[in-house]
Image (cartoon, rainbow, N blue to C red; front, side, top):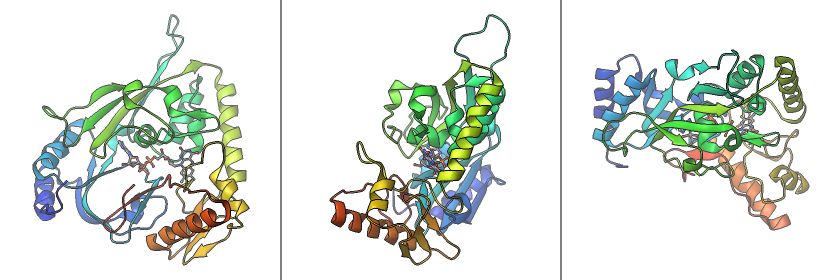
Length: 322
Ligand SMILES: Cc1cc2nc3c(=O)[nH]c(=O)nc-3n(C[C@H](O)[C@H](O)[C@H](O)COP(=O)(O)OP(=O)(O)OC[C@H]3O[C@@H](n4cnc5c(N)ncnc54)[C@H](O)[C@@H]3O)c2cc1C
């Protein structure tokens, strides 16, 4: 991506073609669960594939730095903000298609969901329709696109187990027509909180394989997960697990064993409820969170020799992007 992109000209081109969808200087804080971070140079909200294709045509001309944001539940944006183009999906991308319940149907019914569908909504809709397998998503406050990108998982399950295929549109490097193309689960090389998707690739939709069960059984599992999350994880402003779990261990356990629950830098604090969750309190800055991340890494390395690796994606102008 080109650092000398003329962002005013990029915004002008987008505004001309997508006037209601384009804004300049939007607050990143409003796009993420941490609710911190500086301004976004250019934000475009694409409501359907046509709009996203238009975004791709403009992006290919200007080649700005790109960031696709889902629910912003795994992102920390720097206080300096982002001097590039942020793309958010909405509208058509929030649709869920459940299979019918007629006789002769497949034993592995397929649920299709747009890239912007919130995972808890997907989990509850599938459960209510007696489609089992997606219940674990109820505790993960991301989007379908974010779940594919991150291979999100919890409660013993991961996206790779239920994903059938995803539709991906490359905003800059696709070659030819910028339209979404299907990518099988194997092609995405999903690993622990990893896929091979590039920053310019947008997941527009995904298909999940489920099994038939009674809605009551599915909804009971959903309710159990919600209860477990309330008991074990804090609410408020955070982005879930800050660090990846080292092989065979848990980052939360290691941080707690180092005596770091409650450790504070400015308005950022290690949660008392779950040591791998860092809370941003009112008035916190991204710098506070970043400094707390570095301080926890330093102290854990000193006490246990473990090098904790962030799961959180740190993005923005003065942040080393991960
Ligand atoms: C309270 C809490 C609990 C959590 N628990 C879990 C958990 O149990 N398991 C777990 O795995 N995660 C958990 N998370 C983290 C987070 O919810 C997941 O990583 C989720 O998959 C991120 O989805 P998102 O839409 O918020 O992505 P974002 O945070 O918006 O983005 C994350 C990454 O995905 C990319 N991305 C987002 N949307 C798209 C798209 N449409 N196409 C392509 N790329 C996209 C972004 O560019 C970025 O690289 C938790 C977070 C919170 C706040």
